[in-house]
Image 1 (cartoon, rainbow over the protein chains, first blue to last red):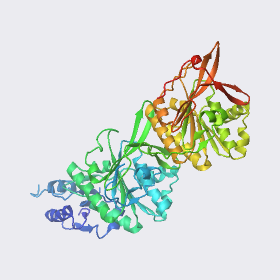
Image 2: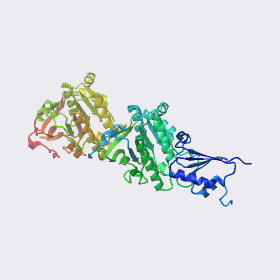
Image 3: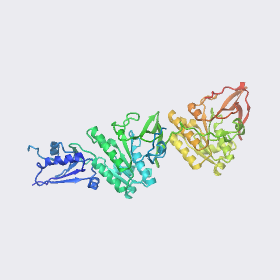
Image 4: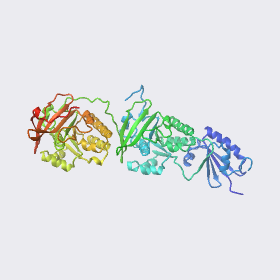
Length: 94
Length: 488
């Protein structure tokens, strides 16, 4: 049992890039450990979070755990790059 | 100056002098782009725009920073008298900090936009009720994007959102060269219909700061480059160069020259609202002529301002007393103000601002400047010309009579001063002092070379100087003249 994986996706609802990111993460789910936590925050609903976290560009995926914190900006369409950044196995399980 | 069919509403820029160039201020509820090379004062422009809104118009402001940290901005602009930290506590100033966070490494995977930034700006604007937004600067923003296309789209997104918010905003952008492409990346200028350029060029060995309004959609403005300076307690101050196409109102009122004989030569004295140039070789008595001009005005109940770039106050007072003129008493009576400044102590723009400030606070009826030559020594031809135009404009619009002295290079004759073309163009009256060879002795003569709008005595008259000042005598017979300079 390792440290649980905690991911948070910041989006701004209604924007193209954010909508695409929400689709992209579906493809990641299968690669995530069973106990992984995954949360989506719509900054349009919660602007104070955007300010507090000083977020400029969205969509933004943050891996809060395990450390170190990883930040990936973009619509996550480059899935291989996302997996690699998060330290997740490839789609074929390699 | 050009005027289009309609004029959009303006908002005071907060930069003294600039609203004159902008014909009222920045376009209200619009975005204006301010571009300039490094060190031109772009950040200062943005900060001052907000500070003026808060301090003078009770309008809150939001500052979006892509480059400097808020802490640095709070600290760096205190010396201008702007207490950003207190304004933040009062809820009148909000930062949106988009400066790079070095501790956070971010991987890019796919397309992104700046919607989160827009959310933050909207949030800050609605919470503070801000009417002004400054964004500094686009360069560091653009660098975060892999493709210029994406950067351009992001900038347009921000510009459109700002417009929807109904705020008046200023966005700064870098450029590489003072006279090159408008912006570094070549597309920022398309984000806005209003573009202002700041320049900081070296001309000779002199730094020359100018501001130019390149375009202003739906509004008129003054064209060309206008000088500006950066003052510790004020920030940017623009000196509009308004003179060129202005027709000055002519005046028929005569004012004393300070010398009865010269009044006679001028058919009653100098005109009100006119500019007089006194030229002469060294030692001919130009400063004395200026002193008579000052004392003559004071004797008639006029207030007089003497700006000397040649001598100290003490020296001015001593010289005047040698000619029987009591400057100290005149100052004590509140009729005279003596200002002595070393030409090198400030830039030409600052000297001009100083004069304006003195005119504003002392409210003189006449002004003497001794001498232009001293100022010319510290300036480039271009900035000197702009100084002259600014001076002329100020004297005429304030209905003053102004007298300037200038030295001729040629000791023996009456050759004109260098840069004379500009000086004589702005001068309504030219009085020449010159050495004349008369019989076997050298003496001195005075002539009125030019007097706009009036007939005048064209003879050369001999004069002497003693402890009561200058005494002008009879006309010198023509054949004994050495030579007179040609009237330009």
